[in-house]
Length: 160
Image 1: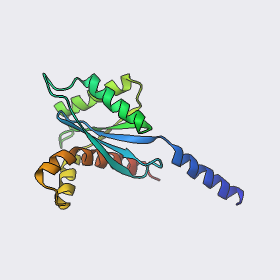
Image 2: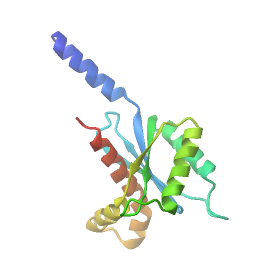
Image 3: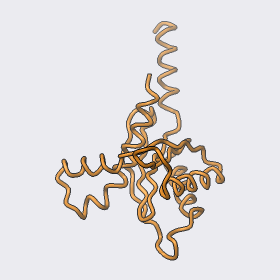
């Protein structure tokens, strides 16, 4: 092995050791989660959190705490939160909710990036329909598939 091979092997090893990334599709009923591989090349659906119901839904701080715990369990050094906007790019109530969750995560010391997620839920629905999933299964899986689409888009934008 020459010096170039050793340098490339060390770089590949360092990339493989980078903390993974957690992708989050924030919703008011369910929150989809996806995680990257250690090389930050591929996103994989992780799970769907059911948001506690009650007056106004689960408090943002509690939801952020749950997401931060999962990020730590998955050894993620960064959380990418999908930022829903209208097709025209305007903020909506969902945009403000996602920003509030991102800010609460930051308050817990989590490194967070917001990522435009327009149409990720539509794409997730399309993927699940193509896979032949029934309506009930689609409802449960849609959010984590959307989180995977969000995270994969973020990962792809950083290649090269």
